[in-house]
Length: 192
Length: 142
Image (cartoon, rainbow over all chains, first blue to last red; front, side, top):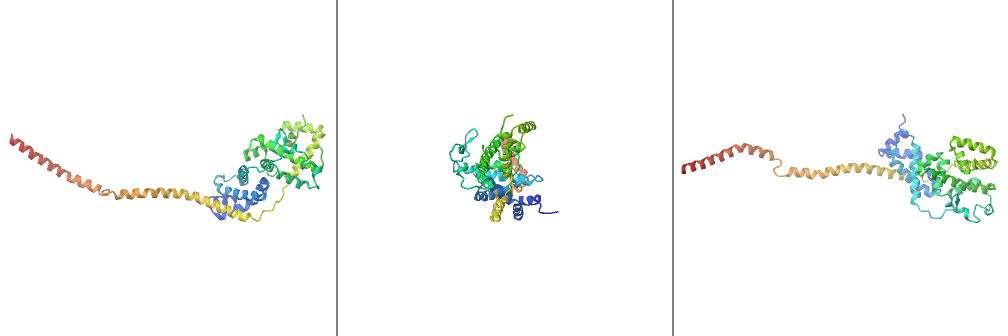
């Protein structure tokens, strides 16, 4: 029997076996980093969050129930770390996504915003436009978007993973997609 | 049913209850504007679900090593904290145990008790004989 299964490595990690810790992390660190990058939107932040998440994963293994799937537990720990880091970090700028009225965000009230196709100097690839627009979303909106579209979680699973009320998850998702949809409208010249 | 972008999003997410799913399908059958919006949203979904292959950063092995060092230190500290508490308790009790063994007579208590008990009848005999002598003298005076 393979002695390096996740199950066996986790048992050895709990005993403080450094080699087992290294081996276990090497299997999941790239996934953890990509998740942190999608949530934070910044490479440097993602590296910090990754290290914090890897430490929490190893020190929290006592709370993992052996026999259950490891990746969802690991994702939960990573999301918690990202959320804590995002909460600690006070917003440095006012987001154009800040709601000012029901269904209206601050960006909607500005004239000549970058969404106006006339202001766009040259055509950009839709994927790049979306990527940039995602990076400008509020961190929590970006988080629920990643949970839904990259991790494939249901609304209820997102609420459980992020500790946000179900209604808030739906609102964040709706507003984030509306914002992105407007960006796509700029790229494709859609009306309305 | 009224046109609703929110409902269209939930429909695409597969989060609508069966009754509402049926309603929205019926609505889509007769509303070109919602059909158009749905196809636009589908395009957005496609973009969002693209799994961009982000290259693993070269710092990852270093970050892993740092994380392992921090985590193992924390694990050993936790284990050590348990052991040192026990050690501290043992150390705390040691002077007390050593002190008890040094109390003068602590080890001689048994000897003392044996000696006393052995000597007690003689003492009693001595006392009673003295008492007898005193009482005899009193009787003689009378």
